[in-house]
Image 1: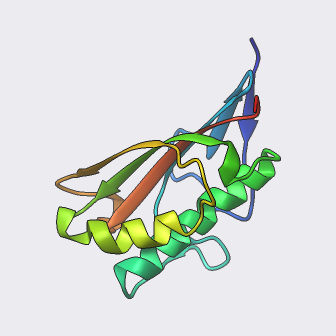
Image 2: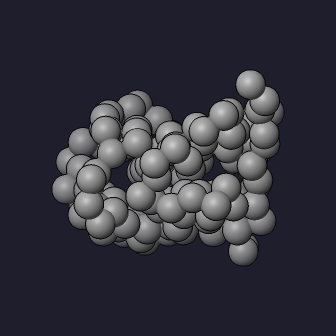
Length: 128
């Protein structure tokens, strides 16, 4: 099986030894995205909903670079700085899916990169 690197200028550039996504066969593994605006390379500040929206837009750009959509997503992991943010992030997250929600876990962690409140990673499949 071959491994293909997926990167797009429409999502934040990696800041370490990783790629935005890796396509392996029919699966796309998307690295955790935080609320960085790729146009300015600045963190989105404001409400947790604004952070979540930027994260989801970054994920959307990576999916599109692989010719996929949120309909192709089969698994997500949401990392929160505090579980009290769950409802607000969940509302934004849910608005990006139309049906057949993917499998998911949501965990609160002690810290996230750049002290953001939300990070989300995804696995998608082209075999639908």
